[in-house]
Length: 241
Image 1 (cartoon, rainbow, N blue to C red):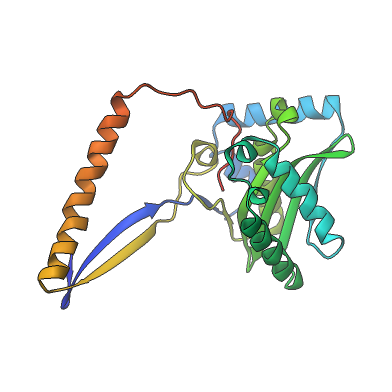
Image 2 (cartoon, helix red, strand yellow):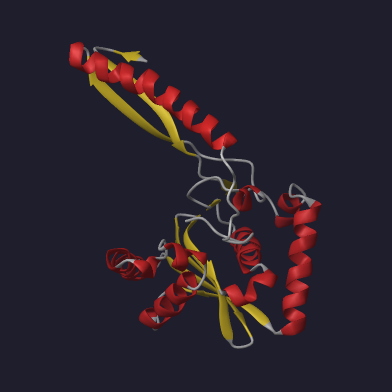
């Protein structure tokens, strides 16, 4: 793209899914796959049969440190902890989210959701809720409860809550993974726009990004299509973000 006196490139780097909340839950539910909702109801029923379960939503106004400790331990207990991507896996990441939680709690926009069963938490979501929009930042669950698919149950409960409260939007954030796209087909586009001077050095750099990068991506894609596939050990309920 050539804009004004500079050379520019615009590319999509991520497509975060979201649900626009318009109308009652029943209308939205009819847009979802019957297989998905049948599975959700079956897992809720199984969970309630084995142990009484509730969804609790905390705003951090009471015992914030205790709630964060519990939630971060849950998030670290699964594949994120093993892979080193959990909040508590890095000191600076842990500090960032604790400071974010304190800031958000002070403004009344922090939402910590827990799926509690038999007196203990088996699922966790760290979110912000502001101006009618729910932003899901982090989530995790107890691997021992994987048969109930806690992540799926919490997404369904969180979306129901958003409709019940009359929020405007439910933002999954992060990449458009299959577990998120079960609930919506709409995504934002996050763009990176690069601008280069219209001189020999700038033109050369622009050409490298405009033509070299796509060719490199196609080459990597071709290589990945022929290399042996490794089994994904994270399980079917792994959450992004």
